[in-house]
Length: 462
Image (cartoon, rainbow, N blue to C red; front, top):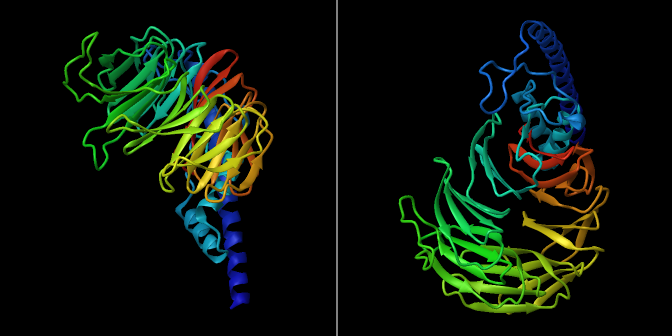
C-alpha cells in the first residue's frame, strides 16, 4: 500500500507540472498575440481615455508587466487573465490528501508560483487622492472606499477602477471609517462624525460633540441584546461616544442636542488611540497608558487595565477566550482577562513600538516599528515565528491564518504565516504603504510612489 501511494504521488506531481507548464506556455503565446495586436492598434489610434470624464475611446491594454515591476501611475491596467484549470485545482486537492497537507497552506505556494510565472495577472493600478496620504481603506466585491488626509472619500469600482464618486464635506483629514451595507461612517480632524449614503454619494447626517480629532470609528452590528447597529467613535478629547446608526430617511440632527447619541464614555485622561468592539463590549487603548473595558448597553466602565508604561497604539478583542490584547510604545504586548481585569500574559520580543495587532484563525500577529512581524499562540503566549526583512517600520498588515501581507517603508510583502518564509515582494521601491486589506479573491493596498498616491489591486483567486 505504501508503494502504491508513493507511485500515485509521483504521478500526481508529474501531472501538476504538466498542467502548470502547459498553462505557462499558453500564456506566453497569448502575450505575444496581445503585443502584436497592441502594435497594430497603436498605429491607428493615439487617443486614450482617462478613468473619469475622459474621451469615450477605449484604452489599449499594454502587455502584462512582471509582478515586481507593476505600472507606477497608469490609471487602469488590465492585463490578460489566465484561469487555472479545474484539473489543476482537483489535482492539488488529491496531492494534499495523500500527503496530509492542508489545501489552503498548499495554495499559498501555488499562489506564489502563479505570480512568478505571470499566470495570475489581473492587476489594477488606480490613481487616487493626488499627493495626499490615504489614511483609510475598505472594500467589498463591488467597490473600494478610501479616505485621505485631505478630507475626501473616494469610491472606485473594484473591477474597472472607475471613480464612481468623491464624497466631500469634512473640513479636515479623515482618520477613521466604517461601512455597514450601503452606509459609510467617517471621523475627522474637524471633530465631526459624518454618515453617508454611498449609493447616492450623499452625506445624510453630521454628528457634533467631540471637542478634538475623531481618531477611530467602528460600526458594531446588532447583537442578541441589542436590535440596532451602533457607531463607536473615539477622539483625542479622551472620550468615546456611542451613537445609534441612522436608518435611511431618518431626520438630520441639530447642531446641539443629537438624538442619535446614546452614551459618552469618559475615564481616559489622554487621546484614545485604538478601539475594538464586539457584541456589548468595547475596549479602548489610550495615550494615558491604560486599557479600558466598557459595556455598550449601559456606558459603564467595567475594567481599567494598568500595566503599560507608554502610549497604547493597538487593541484587539479575543471574544472566544474572553480576553483583550494591547500593543504599546513600551515595546510589549499584554493579554488581559475580561472576566477579572487581570494580566494573563506579557509578550516580549519587539524592540520598538507595537502599533498593529491582528487576531484570527487562532493566531495573533503583531507589527512593530522595529521592522518585524511576530506570530504568537494566543492560548499560551508563545512566539511561534519572527518575520524579518521588511524595509522599515510595519505600517499595515493583515493575515488569514496562512499568509500575511505586510507593508513597510518601501515594500509590500507576502509571507507564509506557518513557516515564517518570505514568499515574495508584491511591490518594491515605494515611498510608503499606508493600508492593505485582502480576502479570498483580492488584495487591495494604498501606496505612495514618486509622491503620488494610488490603489493597487491584486487578484488572489488563482
